[in-house]
Image (cartoon, rainbow, N blue to C red; front, side, top):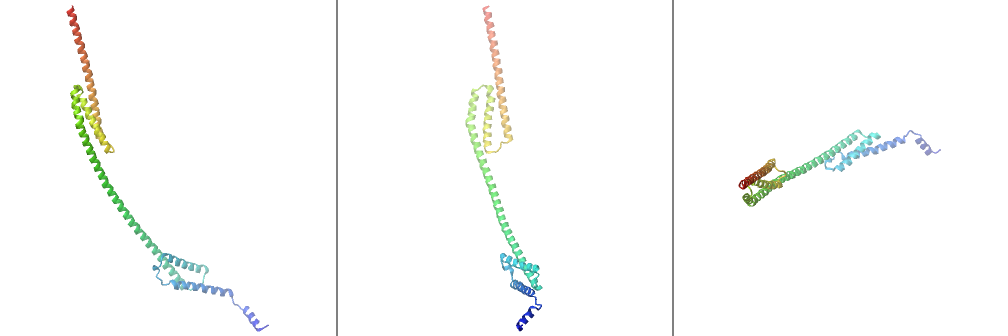
Length: 252
């Protein structure tokens, strides 16, 4: 056996643990990964970074930290402390940016809400002004229409009533006048109902009372007329009887 072969056999038969060497080398590589992460982000001002970049850094740091606890890597404790410190700072900055974003959105929403409330208030004021203007116009139109009806009543109905009074029997003057007044009231109520959603109870009461009085006057007038006709017939019969008796006496 040669000298070289003997040395190789001695080396192979030694107590060198190849698996342990590989594991240590792998741990050294991982330890370097932790150190690089800490060197890159330790002492960095995270407030200048965007939220997306911060989330990537946070996920990388959490991945390394989980890897350490799962694989039980032989990493220096100060490196792990630095790693946790960086993760905490990044997490705080992410939360801070989210809070600022929410606050900004709330302020924007509050401004928009304030503008919307102002618009609603303005619309309500404009609606109130328009409502008053419409009410005033309706009152003006109602006054004009009522005036026109009054003129029509004064021009047409009053002369007609005077002419009718001259031609009708005395018994029918009162119901005739009450009918004319009732007709004028109906015209006024009709005009009033055009510009109002409902007619007042007092107006209905006056109209009903006028109707009742008109009907009552007509009934009384007809009754008096019938009574007068009956009395006329009786007088006529009595007169005819007296005439007949006088004729009979003369003949006798």
